[in-house]
Amino acid sequence: MKLPGGNGEACEHRSIKRACREWMRASGAPDAGEEQWTVAGKADVYSVEKDWIVEVGNTSVGKLQSALLDEDGPRFILVPFQELEWKNGRPRRLLAVEFDCAESVHDEIRASHWAAMERCARALELHDDRFEAPARSTSTGE
Image 1 (cartoon, rainbow, N blue to C red):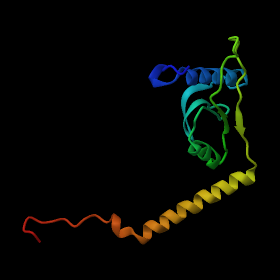
Image 2 (image 1 turned 180 degrees about the horizontal axis):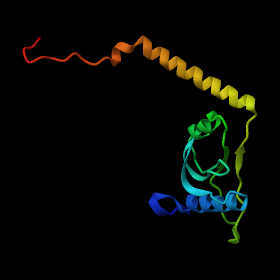
Image 3 (image 1 turned 120 degrees about the vertical axis):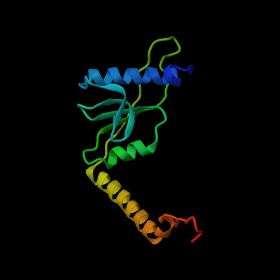
Image 4 (image 1 turned 90 degrees about the vertical axis):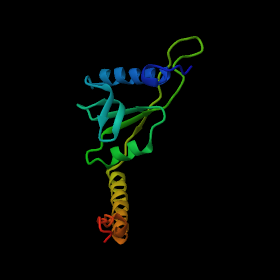
């Protein structure tokens, strides 16, 4: 059941997020906290000490891309929405997906990103007249 929690957050999301925070703390990240700012934006759970991001449910691919663009590349785990209990009410284990890429993949993503940025910069240079300030009018109409 998806009842709203604090700040409009669904109870399911909040429950999984808290479980992830406790899992991270038990796994050697005692500073893991909810709603923390990272290189990839605001993460559901993050450990500064371990540079470990956990996102719960539906997450923008931009967060993963930002993490992969980072030189050191934080650990990035996605925990999809899933049933939290068996039909008999007993808790279920959570399924998590860790994105772990070879350095060559990181390099390819960075190269693609910077090539796109350069294309945008060139396009703006070709059309820079769009960004010039409009001419000021004078009180005499000149």
